[in-house]
Length: 187
Image (cartoon, rainbow, N blue to C red):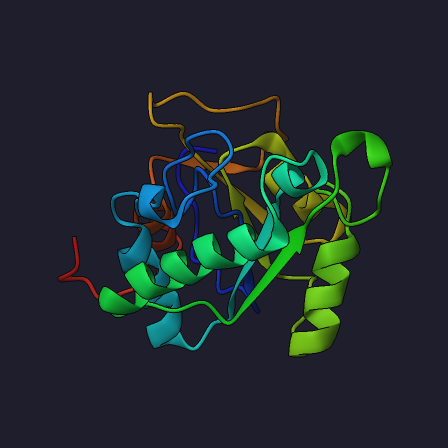
């Protein structure tokens, strides 16, 4: 889908690495956190519209022993500090700490984290927007009757394959503008 009609989601579930921040592999140092261009701008559109913005992220580096839970929390704190400095915020953060071979229900594209977030935050999964840079981030949209938005990787490529109705965009801000968020004078 190249263009989208106006879509007003009940909530937006966002991947973190590669969608909001530069994906450097396993982000294990708060000093390595760098917001992607227009990521904070996109979150501000959601904040201004009153649409809950929730990070849902796989962090298998914890389960693989690459970094600790405390390190993840320090990195996440840095992410939120950088967003706050740009006038943006997230309403919740949910993460899967397991290695892929553990077979848990919380690892995306599984639905466990989405169900937990929806229950704890009182948001609807149906009619939500599912945003990320990989197919596993947007595939839950099908199962949960939402909409998927695939953000291009840093080289402009899209991870796939994904369903044909997934909106493909260069960045979060541009995608949200295509869906009708923001004012006409915002570019």
